[in-house]
Image 1: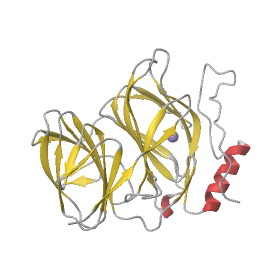
Image 2 (image 1 turned 180 degrees about the vertical axis):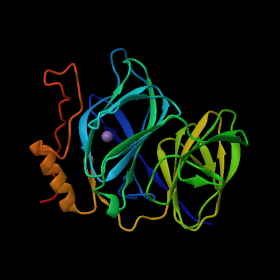
Image 3 (image 1 turned 120 degrees about the vertical axis):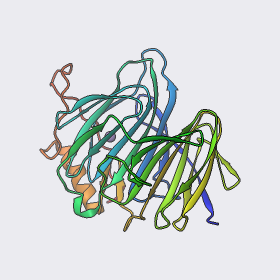
Length: 296
Ligand code: MN
């Protein structure tokens, strides 16, 4: 039986005191398939006047994948998209050559529970045109007291509508009363799972929302027992050719690609557009400042 590796999450600050738990990348595991970033936000009840407000920041060579479980978040980007994502929905933003976006709680003092993921684009698509798609509905089915939502990839006869570019899987499992499911896995895939609420028992061990579990390729089945009011995010994929480089909000297939993106962001060049902001004096959202590169 494959050994499951437990990876402790670390805390990260998105700004304005908005704390999240980061599962990927970790020094113990950088990616799961093409999934290269996983933040767990909430569940949180914001104090009056507080909410999530992430200012204008760029991305490159990745797709941001937002899975919203509770709350409402306004997405705005440099392509002119502006919409509210609601529970059960996915936003998939392809950065490619470059895109900028903002994310804001629709109301302050509300609730938020979300998984924020990034998918590394394969090298031949890393520089593609940016794109944004909102998916209001995903395949959902119920068995063994567990609600399954297919977020990405294929499972059995079902295929998620989300346009991804690597062989991969994303699935949300939720149970109110608790239940056991025997999942079919692809033995060529590596997998990871993250409890989002409650607890899950796998191979006789219990996992809670503070830990991410990593499974090497080679498994074709996985039995999972969810406790009451438990939710688990399952990720999988063909191991990526080589781990991508990551710095701040940039992904790249070389350090030079990231350094170049950072230079162009700092210079305010045309590569990265602007996000409209009617309230701001300039008419566009102020750009966040990138931290200095960690390499010379
Ligand atoms: Mn972002």
